[in-house]
Length: 99
Image (cartoon, rainbow, N blue to C red; front, side, top):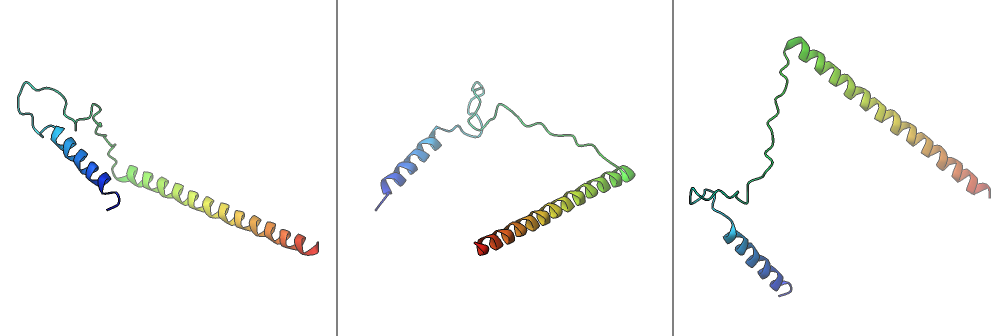
C-alpha cells in the first residue's frame, strides 16, 4: 500500500535497462561498439617473484618478526594509555572529593 508506486517504478526502470543492454555476444560482426560491461581499463596480471628454500625462509622470518614487533608496540601503547587514563581518573576523583 505505502510505497508501492516507488517499487513499481523501480521494477519498470530495471526492465527498461535490461531491454537496452546488449546481448553477451554481438549479433553482427560490423558492430564494434564496446558493450556496457566492458571496461576501458583492463587490470594487469601481476607477476610475483618466486622464492625458493632459504630465501623464502629468510623472508618469512622477517615478516614474522615485523608482525611480532607491531603486536608488542600495540600492547605497550594500549597498556600505557590505560595506565595514564586510570591515573587521570584517580586524580580527578580525589580532586572532586576534597572540594
